[in-house]
Length: 235
Length: 217
Image (tube, rainbow over all chains, first blue to last red; front, side, top):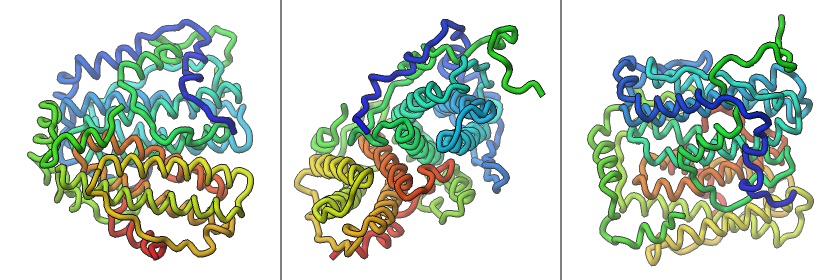
């Protein structure tokens, strides 16, 4: 395995089409500008539910400040969960890669559940995604997953020290390290060193959003159903 | 790039904080008991069958003194890991990806040791001697021990994250995700899923010490 520099392989490399970016910008706008309004409607007790395991309530709804961070994390988890779930469903992956997509997909869906539960009614809605064939192409899937996971690690690392609630911080930290495990997992399957550097650096949210936007995986409207890309499931 | 040594040498009595961070600290300190029983941390632990960390979470709040205590413990973890990989490489019984793992991860642990020593300055504790037995010569035992050391190191860092001041947390977080990558890689070498659960359960310093103590000569 040769050394790998994340800068050499960005999500931009998979920008195969120039599609709509409004939805992610809307997420960002809501997390930044509209968070006070959204937080005002937050439920009194956000619930945590990891699958069928026992649920425990957070004593208070997250503060407006933490709500903005949680919604940012939720947007990233929506993206990852949709990506792996679609890859798993299409079934074009095989062997170790298929197993990775299946297991990591479950994790990302759990992360979505956790953040949605914490946010209650303040949670942003899931955007539409169009992965433009990447989830049905093992090689493109692998490269994109590497970029997504390294991006998630850097994004959480930037946000964690900004979280004010110690309980929410504890949860974010516990998810941050799982994202790093995911990154190591997929990097190894892609032939990269799982841990390429002794230190991982954070990435500001604006940069994260820029990178995600550049993929055009997030769409405002429903994907074109008349396009050559067949719906994964037609029943 | 934020350097721990800069952070900790700024002020021997107490870390200078930016107003924004001071406000955060105040916010955190203002309601230390609010989430003590029903917080996400406890929920995560409950869901994963962990211990009672909720009380510990409530009991502490970040301070420069506490930062140094946690960094000192982190140093002992990194030193033990670095010594383990160095000895395994000296023994020369590893091959293929396992050897590459020991080389790459061993080098990174040494970088972590230096990073934390720079941060602690003269208050850095001395390094003990270690005994790893045949865990550094038998490849199967090496992998099993590497998994244990990396899983434990990560879990105790995660457990202490909430006890750090925001600045030191930011500095330590640069190490923590690398430890998580090491844990994932070690597990892969042992034919285990690199990420076995959706949320990593933290452990206490005492729990970590029980794992590490047998390796201290």
